Length: 201
Image (cartoon, rainbow, N blue to C red; front, side, top):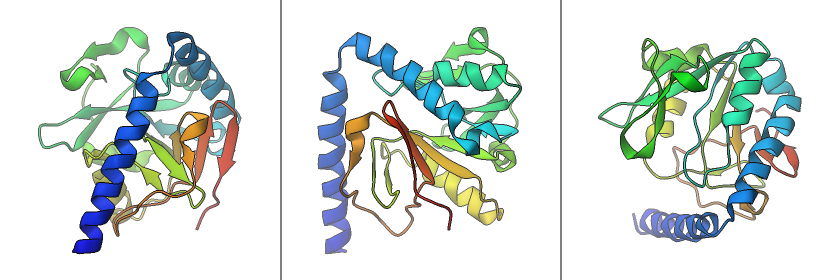
């Protein structure tokens, strides 16, 4: 229990440091990052070859996903976007373009189309995960809300093994991310500098 509490506080400190660094980014860096992520993301075989991609709409100072979402859709991919449920689980709906997004709670942008249910993520060939950092083992540090822990657990229960990809700023690839037993490594990280694959187990 003591080690678990230490890991939690280590995660909290790292989250605070990374969020502070994001808050200091100038607006022009955000636009450059979004375009670079789209270019590198489209070149990633796991995304290029996917028929369905579960993704998310970046908000605030998150590395921008909008250009990548539109590029995936333009290539004929079925793009699923999350809808946050009251219990922090995620429902999903198909992305139908920028005009199909609406403001929701917590500053989120969510799709307005028909809800497909939480299990819809199990149809994805690749899942884009939000995060704050990833380390050389592919361990991801999330925001701490637990929504994507549920997504990953749902995929595991269904026996699904989609490519897990996290989008980050270049300096968010760190030496080590503190981990807990339920944490899953990702298969690749995309930053403005390029792609780092971690391999598939």
